[in-house]
Image (tube, rainbow, N blue to C red; front, side, top):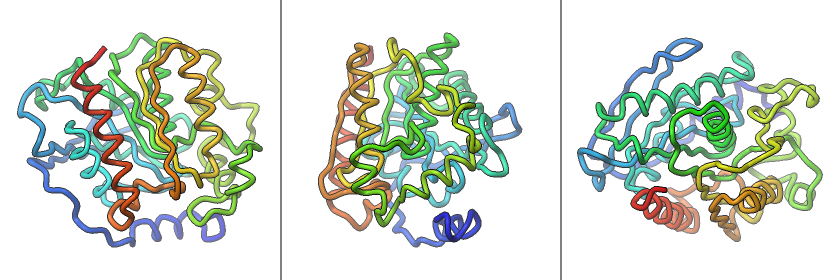
Length: 291
């Protein structure tokens, strides 16, 4: 991606033709009044979700903080809404390099607060709201959980993290083995992180790079899904280990034969569909039994 540039990467992602995905009971667009301007959001209510008191998942899409839209992540949003049985709020946060850190983080936290404040309007149970995301969106979800804990913000029932980008590129075995993978390279990681965070790691904090958090205590339960062939695998699993050591109930699921971005490949890859179904079932159970 770093060889074709931001515009090329965005065009490539948006040009992928995907099948429509599962039918929803309703799909509605809304706008959040955020700290940096309005934030578009698309709300998916699956057929299995009741009209009132439904669980909800505030979702932040992937794309390395530089790409991704409600259009390109529509299929994944439908798959996850169906798999979890939750009303899914797909947040169209601002992208780098036009908007650098902490803009997307600010918008992610604002979206969580908005969903809590308007829960009754959407037929959502405010006691059962989770955050989640894939790749860069997983980093935003993780940071939002940290921010809500630190600021005494809205309650979060659980975190749902598909291969979250919680650290800059780090010299780990999975990075050395899979750093030239077809869907994400080590150079791409450096390039995209620099686009959003800047190129000076000494300026990073725990919200921009959640792996830097000194304490993971008192965070919401977590479900973490990662592919065996993902260069970020070892860093993600190290974060999951830290969550468990801090007393956070954490399920870590590693999928053989899959790499970074596998949730987006569900329309064509059976093992990716199975992974989404498995994660969704666990998330649904946890929504039925909130802490």
